[in-house]
Length: 524
Image (cartoon, rainbow, N blue to C red; front, side):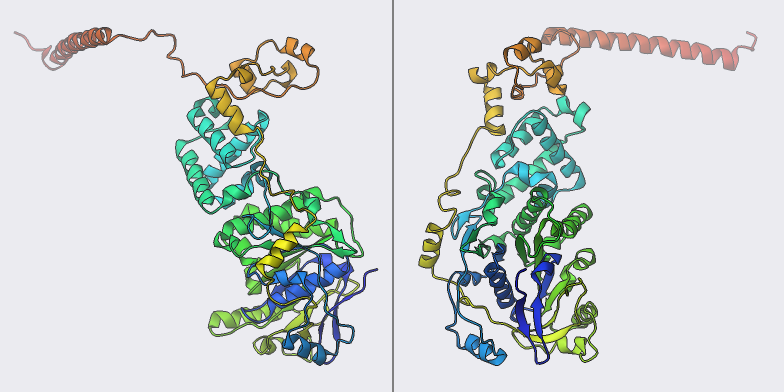
């Protein structure tokens, strides 16, 4: 069994985080400048020392110091002496740098299909109707074997469905031009924020986040200082990553220590304006992902940033100082104090506003899964360097990484954009595409035809790839011949004469009837 993690010490007791309880998730909270980043660094390196891989976002660029041994700071030396950490020694951790923009780390990408319509709809801030149209786009692409890998694939599908909406309405629902336009505008805005570098291939292989080196877990460091300029992209990316881990990792039950620890910094960005359906998904993932060996730790300024349904799942808590300058702040302090298991020797609410930098209220789960009583303690200093490494050191770190050269070159294979472009241009390659066997034919094949399906099935027994979507012909005029300009004038004149004759007869009949009613009984 892994050794308990000593991460805080008080005058009365030591605080140990049990690795077997680390996948019950946690919360690190506190106002700006109270020591959350150092706490995060201490926990990350202690997990790494026990062979547990870590994923965390580096918001301010300070956490890259995990890759180098520390001990040069006078404040660290003073804290080591104050806490009497006799076994403390400077050390470094294996670090892999990642960056959505590919500047301060290896590029990290996901495909449009992997992101899915639910997360993408939130990223684009779509209405319910617009999300419905986006779902249709994904459904049509999936049913016809059209890969959605990058933004140009999604744009091509939107253009095609928008131009041929009538052909899809009966089977999929209404596709309005306004909704298509709203989605396209959202994609354009995303592209201006750099999302075109995030969507594409090669997509991130989750196994690359679960590496170890010489018995130490690799710390996967996401450079997020530039990514924070697009907070929705940042939050949606981390939520996608968490969801992918949940979907792909097998059930393992309770392990002696986690397979991966995931730190979600600036967690309030995740829950801002989150739709109810997505919040339910997040709650489900947080509740169930522990059985897959993943511990999730939310890092934020105030516990109020986390919805109650999620907050209730966070068993290990480190609460740094909170400020109480306004009535709302005072209410938040009271609320945070009430979430801890009471300590009769401690006035939790009063202490919350008195904590010094690097000091916190801590409560963790014991071996039975019960939260310990809250205690006031000093956080142990990290063994690695506090503060960022130099750009030259970062480049060296990337060159020596386990994934060096794997993600740097973009791959653009045949997908929805290429197939739709070829179908519209009528290229010979697409014209010769094999037909879909009869058993595989769906609405598209029945509507537009796919040739002799049985012959194709005999020639190629394996399932043939579906052909690209053909161009939809203009809607029929019901078999009526197109009228010349002269015929239109003649028919218009005939209609005018007929209308005049009918109008005259109608007036004469009306006069006759009215006359018989009003004066028919008079004698002449």
